[in-house]
Image (cartoon, rainbow, N blue to C red):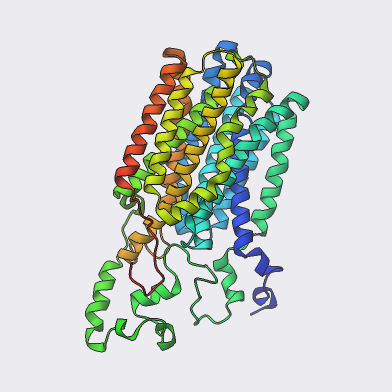
Length: 492
């Protein structure tokens, strides 16, 4: 074997460290959120001033710009999840998503034509499907399940941080430097993202250098390298393979004698038969369906306000693009508390926390109906209510994202090999991403249609009713206790 094969890459430990991989995932999600939201406050102005869209059609085109993003993500997410669970590396699809992200930025840079912008939003939606699905699956591969709520909250907070700072920043840059100032800012962020994703090395690929003895099982507490839901120790436990040293970590009473070995192995082989389509099997689980519905409703609210708030404050308060961007601080600022929400759910469970948060979101959404006049009181009320909506969404998404990973882990533990040797984390998170995408489609379409046909008040009443229904579903089907798993060899 040549030196090129055996010599470890430069800075291997640093490039494959948990903190570096987590930072890379967080930056990927931050970039995705930034590119999604940076154009939102500028759309009503770009469409009129640069693309020649009549003033009366601005709401319609703004809604289409957001909906095509969600539609592309919705269509691509299941395929991305399946590919990520069946490819030898998570890095490959992440780089594909990156190329789509770069392509969308190039389309933005050509000319602010409304059809080119639609195509760019579609490419952004495809890249979001890859980044969210594969990124969250890589997160679970890297950090394990012990603090998945906290770490998922950190990743989602990174995406929300991008959504938080990009509207006011985009509005300010557009006002000062015009359309291409916004494009240059997008290009710079994508370049940094490219560099980090090329530098990152997955832990499972770093093992051959960091763990030179292939026989020694890896201590999951110190070096999280589980790919899918099966690590080496679990695989040996299921199949009965391994030497005495690999079995010594289990109590002697738990090891089968020679007389009972055959029926036990036969039983575990039967349990280990993988389902043909993991995605459909996941959807059969009421808990997962409830998580998907809660995610969908959260993003109906989020994207609905993304679509109608800039137009509303422009017409009602006569604000410019920078002021329109500032109003999003209320929705996005609480999202920085994602790790806190995840930490709490790791201790008390996701169910009641997410349910109560949905109910709070419903109350705040209905409260927005009472914002009618261009007065200090109404502007202050809108800021308070949007902050409440942002906090509610944050305390729904972070807990149920972590709970989704733990639910898949629990299903695999009950029936080892259920999802095959590669697991189903990416496919589970593709459902999560599909729910996000569907919400991103429905939210802008509903607000665009609802405001034109029913008005501001009734449109928000319907979204409030949806949030209340999600609160009920989450309370009924997502347990109020944490789905924490004990170490291998212990009972659940």
